[in-house]
Image (tube, rainbow, N blue to C red; front, side):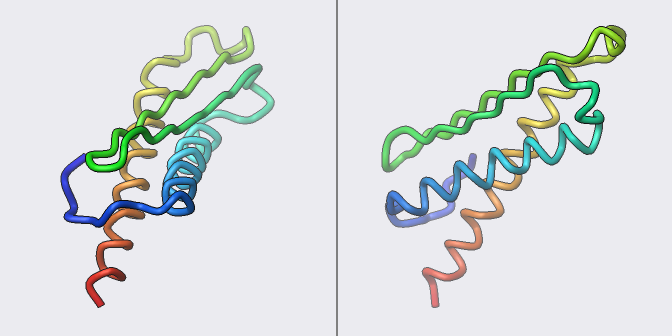
Amino acid sequence: MEDLGLQELTSEQIEELCAVAEEAASKYVLSKVSPKRIDTLSISAEAEGRKPMKLSIDVDIVLSSSMRDFDVQNLVDKAVKEAFKSAEKYLKGLTCHSQK
């Protein structure tokens, strides 16, 4: 992620950032695959450090056997990308509010 010139985030903002990223990844996956076809879906976002902060997003998906020809890795990659996009949007929103 690019440096957005933010001050150090509070614990609450870090929690919200992680929640925003996890929700975005989940929404993306569920927009592409029916929940009935998902055996396991685990999404986690973790922020480490303060400044700079490192955001890690893990998406683990196991699809039902009927989806064996589905490109799961591509789905994971795009879900992670969506999560980072949403996280960056959240951080940019904080930047706008902190400059007022």
